Image (cartoon, rainbow, N blue to C red; front, side, top):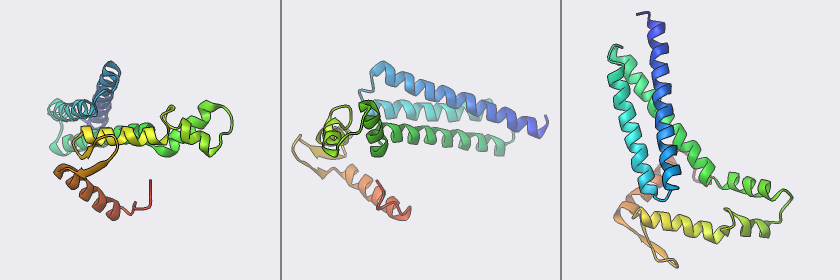
Length: 173
């Protein structure tokens, strides 16, 4: 087979499998109404692992380097999807834009603080995030006080802190 045709065909398979993984994840979120962050993570992990395996075996006719490249491209696409989803669902700046847009007119800062996050307000959004962290068993949270971090929470915090420092994003977000 022509090398260019092999690459085009491999990319087509990557795009198809990636589309199925995204559709599978979105379908799960819609069916369950995104009740569990853990469930969402498990479903996406299964889609990533299953898609990677499917690509590897489906492209058995291709050289190993092309197969590995296809799997890496698929993984990059999945990571891009998750980053974009995270940005849209939890990005502070975009959330503020959505709240101002839905309001349809200028809003004072005090009004935005109350409206923030579909009417939850800043306190409600903080409560929601802390509840999610507690559900993931990263931190103890009783509704009034956050902390201490669990052993897994300490590891995640340390790695995140090191990554933010390495990527020079300490002052961002």
